[in-house]
Picture 1 (cartoon, helix red, strand yellow):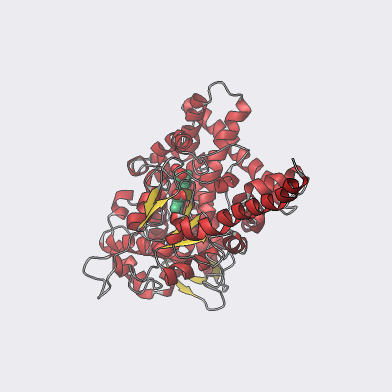
Picture 2 (cartoon, protein in one colour; picture 1 turned 45 degrees about the horizontal axis):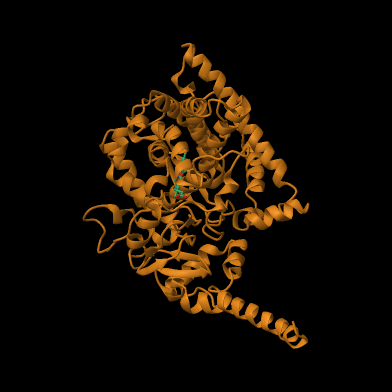
Length: 523
Ligand code: HEM
């Protein structure tokens, strides 16, 4: 080769490389990609993911997505292959209807290095996990469950009512987020593991505090790294750099050991139940029993430790729902009711006129609870629940990946390529002013035929997700919340107290202080 040619080779290679980069980093994402038609949430969105990653790191994604959708419409481009979608028809219905897998973001929810229903990514894996649990959570199974009826009595009459009597006798108000977390953990754990094998946070405020501290450390802000940048985090780990705070791992281990302890106790109860030696139906570990049976059948050749971890991973996730969603929704529901004496009186009179009040007094300390079906048929109670699910759903997005083998159409945009991340927030769907009148106001009447007083609501309630990965605990949630509200408002009046903070912190945090005073209605 002549010296002249060698002299041209270097600049030519540089030009080809620059053109290649220019095409892939600027021209294609900005002008040629089908995603170029979608409005950009930030000017950098077509080129680099940094803007949305920064928002996610700062836990400001919900606010950023809200602003973007309000100003740009139903579909927005958050990053080069990262979209926000906020319409139900032609959007959410398609994304969550099946065929869109979960991204690696969900691997963070693995426990004991084993997947569970919530964090299994691909459709096939998910259906194996889901099959193991769904049977015990159907509405008919719950309504017919003698165990659930019995443990409801134990948790609500045996633990909650005495705690509320004590709170009512104190001059200080009660903080609802903490109370509701303890109650929901105990109630859900009793169903998972049996009443005697479950937790008892309602009778231990300091125990709850310690547990919550570990839980917050496990789900710390820095979880952003393994969730959003799993490959970078893995790579840093191989270099010996651990980006998670020091307390994360010990707290993760603490919670996993605690959960394994509950599983071990439930296993003893299961063996006693098999021999017909359990006297109280409340002690039957309903969910544990079901998951244990399925895991032992599915992982036939695996060692005992693997099977135990697989069971505990699944149950850990169900227990988490008591803190992450049920505990939060219940506390805000009680707070909304406390702010609205009219709603409270209406609930009380609906229960009384249907003969379903659960009045506890010195002469009647253990009243018989009404059936779940009778509480399920109360229209105003149903409206209160729906409105509270609308106002306080999960505040996180539920990311999915478009199918790897075909392009899809969403919100009027065709040819969205395989492997694109799409995100929808129940929170945004429920507060869209195009769908809901006065979306920021808690108005249960909007759910009652002929009572909406001029309200024009067209929106869809999407608190529990939809499609094959819809929340498996939605009927249990309804069941538990109906009993809690019926028991509380048959016996107490609740009023808000001013020295708290409501709605000042990001949704999902436990930092709000929902202060209320419980006042006894009967001695
Ligand atoms: C107010 C209460 C609750 C709300 C708002 C809620 C919300 C949700 C949502 C939106 C999903 C879908 C996640 C996704 O598509 O990525 C989900 C899934 C799930 N929820 Fe709930 N949840 C609640 C209570 C519960 C309870 C009490 C349990 C169990 C005891 C539970 C267990 C689960 C499980 C296991 C999944 C994963 C289902 C799957 O992927 O097949 N949830 N929940």
